[in-house]
Length: 429
Ligand code: CMC
Image 1 (cartoon, rainbow, N blue to C red):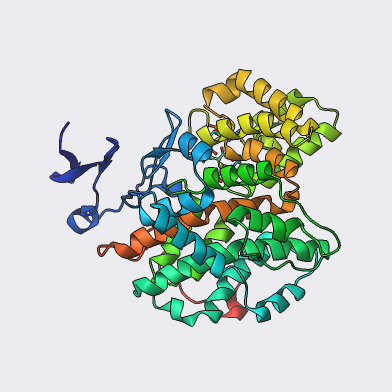
Image 2 (cartoon, rainbow, N blue to C red):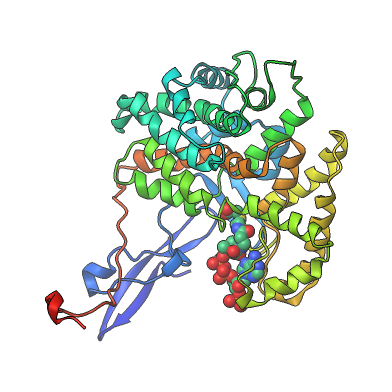
C-alpha cells in the first residue's frame, strides 16, 4: 500500500501521509492541508473524519466486531464485571487482584454524596427528567471538589475518576427516588457496585429488599455493553469540552447531555415507547414499518440503524439473547419482547432496511431487559450514562495524557451575507 496520497490543486501537488492503525484502518493525514493550500476539508456530521487516534476501543461496523483494549465484547459480557471493565478501559489493562481490590474499594469509599447536595434534589419538580438532574448534579460535583479543576494533577485525577464512578450511581438512584416520592437510600459499603445501585434504587425503609444475583449479573452485563463505543457523539463531546482543559466533572456533564438526544442514548426510551404504541395500536408491525419508510412521516424505527454498524450490532445480539434467557429466569414475561421480535423480523426482510443495512442497534432490546429489572422508562438513558461513564473517562484521560493534544476547534465555510451596512431602524422595510 502507498504510504502517501497526492492532492492536486491549482497546479500544485501536495503529498499527504497515510496513517494505518493496528487493525489496518487507513487514514489520510490532512494536518498540513490548510497551511499548504489555504483550503479546509468539509465533512458535516464527521462521516469521514477521524478526530483522533485512540488505543481504547476497536470497532468494525462491517464485520460487527467490538473490542475493548483488544478483548472481544462477547467475552467481557460473559466473564467480567463492570468495575473490572471500567479499570480496563481507563487504565489500559485488566487489573490484577490487588489493583482490582484497591480500585473497587475506592469506588465504595467515595459513593456517598455531600449531605448538602441532597437538598438540590428538592428543587426539581417530581416530573423532572432524570437526565436533566444527572447532568446538573455531576457538574455540581465540581463545586464540592475544586481541587479537580487542576486537570494536570494526575494523583488528583485518579481521585476524581473514583468519585465520578462512585457517585454517578448514587445520583441516578436519588433522582429516581425523587421522582417516586420515596426517601433516599444511602449506599451500603458491603455491597458490590451493581448490587449497591439496585439497593439504592429499590429498597425502602418499610420492608426488607433482597438482591437477586441474577439481576446483579444482568446489570453488570448491560453496563459492560454500554461502557465504550469509540468516537460517538457523547464521547466526542467529552473530548471536545475536555480539550479546553475544562475539568472532568464538566466534561462528563456535557457528555451526559449529548447522550440524552433521541438519535443517541435517548433512543432506548423512544424504542420502549414505540413498542408500547405498537402494542396499544393492536400490534400490527408492518403498519409502523411502512410509516418508517415514508420520508415525510417524520417517524423512524427507533433502535434501528447506526452510523458505523452496517451489520448486526454485536451488543444488540448479546442483549437479545439475554432477554430470551433472563426474562423467564426472573419470572417476567413481557409482551413487548414479542412485539420487538416481530418488528425486527419484518424489518430485516424488508428491502428498505436491507438495502440501507439498517439492523437493530444496542437500544432495540436493552429497554426490555431494563423493564424486567424494574427500571422505569424515563431512567433508561440514565442507565446508558452510568454504563458509558468509564468510556468517557478513558477518552478524556487518553486525551489529557497525550502531550500533542490540541483544543478542538473546527473550521467552517461561511455562507452568509457579504459586508453589509448597518441600516438605521427608521429606514428599514
Ligand atoms: N428508520 C428508518 N429509516 C432510517 C433509520 C431508521 N431508524 N435510520 C436510518 N434510516 C434511513 C435514512 O432515512 C436514510 O435513508 P436515505 O438514504 O433514503 O436518505 C438512510 O437510512 C441513512 O440514514 P442516515 O440518517 O443518513 O444515517 P446516519 O448514520 O446519519 O444516522 C442513526 C444513524 C443512528 C442516527 C439513524 O440510523 C437513526 O436515526 N436511528 C434511529 C435512532 C436510534 O436508534 N439511535 C440509536 C443509535 S445506537 C446507540 C447510540 O449510539 O446511542
